[in-house]
Image (cartoon, rainbow, N blue to C red; front, top):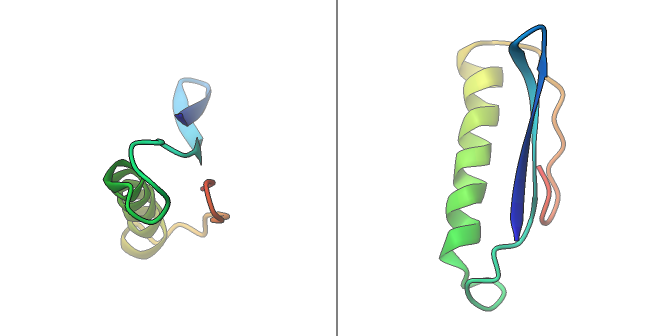
Length: 64
């Protein structure tokens, strides 16, 4: 299962965590995991490259 956890402070989104695997298909063929990974990377790139925030992030297998 994929869990997405959003953290708020004073009503504002300050961080998010994505962890787990979808289990939709075998390793390296799971389109659900791929879709979630793409969205997580898009958010990270949007915050760091487009908005130019110096945001800390960590990405590893099954975790962002």
